[in-house]
Figure 1 (cartoon, rainbow, N blue to C red):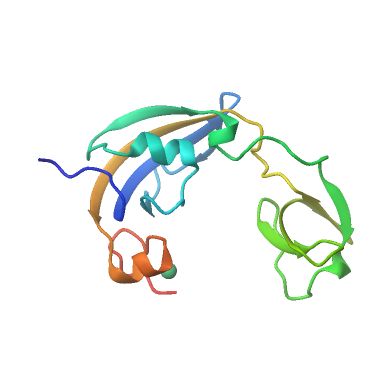
Figure 2 (cartoon, rainbow, N blue to C red):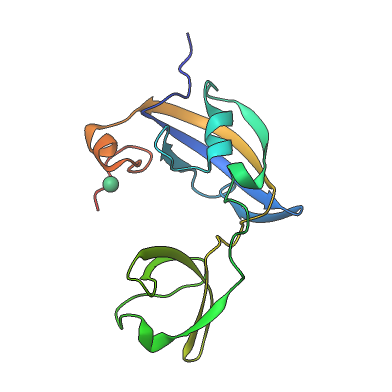
Length: 163
Ligand code: ZN
């Protein structure tokens, strides 16, 4: 029986992500992505759809917001002075960061804009509330290395990436 996508396998694939008929990300024409299946490294709707698929499969997967990056919860982006963040912290648009709210509880937020002395943060992922369409081509499936299982993520196509 051909190898199938299942928990603790590393899957090598090309994918393109579209929202509102626009391509947001794509690996086609570049390096494929390797991910460890069953460890929450993909949005839930995509991970579920890939389960049981075989090498060579090409599929289009539509994912509702709740199974994607979530529904919109917050009130939109708000500005925070840059000096509130540690100097060394890299702040790039689209990256998740952890901050403490007024009661000291850690909260994950997304950077949506960096403008002068202000950093705009949002409680929602930039693609929250969007229906996602993934075009996927499965290129390879292999067993995960012990280190990958320990870390909960893939270490590249051959499993030998160290970080
Ligand atoms: Zn690792």
